[in-house]
Length: 199
Image (spheres, rainbow, N blue to C red):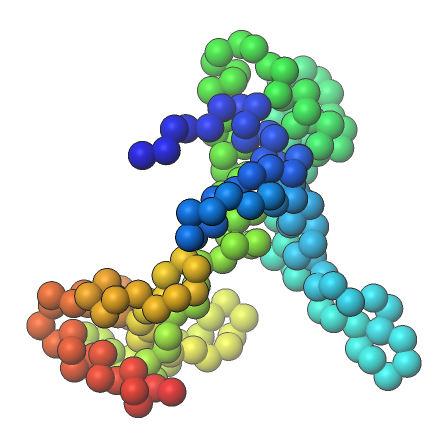
C-alpha cells in the first residue's frame, strides 16, 4: 500500500513538474497537474481556425474544473487568512502551513483537487458497449446528460494502460438498473458472447 501524500507533496504535484508512475511501473517526468489541466482546455492546434478551418472545441469540463479549483482555493484562503490570489500562489502559501489541524484539512482539499484533475487528464479506459438488451431490466439504450444515446450494457475489458485484461477480470454492467456480472456469475459467458456481435 502506498504512503499517503503530505501537503507539500500534494502541492508539488499540482504546481510543479514531478515524477509519476506509469501503468507499467516506470517513473516518468510529468508536468504540473494544473498545467496538464490547462492543456486539456483546448487541444493543441486549436487556434483561431483561420480560413475555412473551424477552431477545435473547448473542453468545457476542463474549464469548469479550473474555475471550481480556483473558487475552492480562494474560499479556503479567505476563511483561513483573509487573503485570495491566483491558485498557484495560494497553493504555494499552503505548502508552508504548519498548524496540524489546518494541514490535515488542506491535505484532503488538495487530494480532492488531484483526484478531480486526474479524472480529466487520465480518464479511466472506455468500456466496450454491448448493443443488446440488459437481461435484468430489458433496457438496450440510455441517454447521457447531453441527450446522446449510448448502450446500457457495457463491459470493462481494458486495464489502466489500455491493454486487454484477462477475461476472468472482466465485468459487465448496466447503467440503467445497476446490475453487474463477473466471470463467476451464471450467464456471464453468454453476455461475453455479445461482445463479438457488438462490434
